[in-house]
Amino acid sequence: MNSIFMHLALLGDTWVLVLLILASILSVGVMVERALAFWKNKGNFSALMDGLATSLEKGDVEGAIAQAEQSQRLEARVALAGLKNFPKGVASVEEVMASRWLHEKQRLEKYLIILGTLGNNAPFIGLFGTVLGVIKAFNDLGMTGQSGVAVVMAGISVALIATAFGILVAIPAVVANNYFVTRIRELQTDTDILCRIILAYLKETGGSQEGYQRRPLDVVRSTEPARKMEGKGLDLMKAAKEK
Image (cartoon, rainbow, N blue to C red; front, side, top):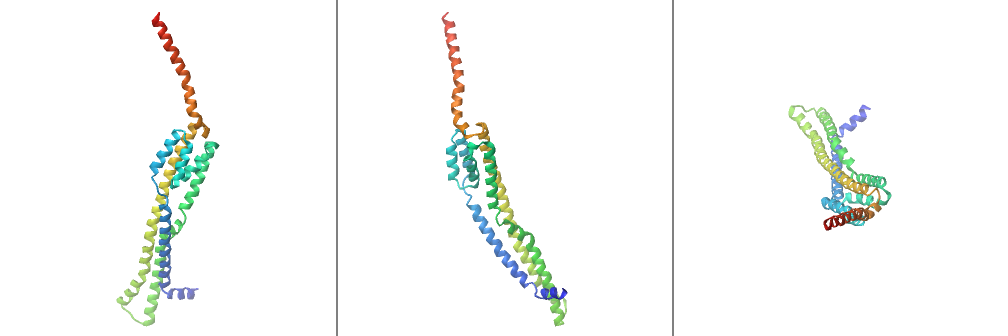
């Protein structure tokens, strides 16, 4: 077992540096791919939120659906899933939007585990390469019979390149991973805002799309008795004055 490890150690840190170079290429590729994926989620969220709220207040569910279909934002796709299921009631709409969000979140988190893994482990891979490099340096010193601080420091300085390179790979990966995770949280908050608006209006109408269609007529009917009573009161006042 010791001989196997010795043969591996005597290879030095070269193969570790090659591994770190490949890891850095993979990391950059994931960063670019995820950046493009998040870039597709473009559009003004405030305008989308205000537009949906205005349409729902007017009872125009079809108009709200049209606005959601025209938007390229992730939040609009979640809202659209709920709006299309209005006739099924509050519970169904809530479950459909929650399910759609989980699907979209899974797409957003794709490949982020690679950035997290490289950010956490690349420095240790580099340190492992440094250890191997130091072992090889001391072995070479023993084989050549050279001595002195300068000779020892030269070998160690070369071995430390692996640690530096590992840190260099880890830092961008950690920064990118934190950025993407933060963006996902922001999108989750925006999505929750739209879901709450939709559910609030749906509950206000009694839990179905038909409630929106009946509400204006119900309001008119509810005001008719009051208007009749107001008219009778005016007639009584006129009769009293005439007497």
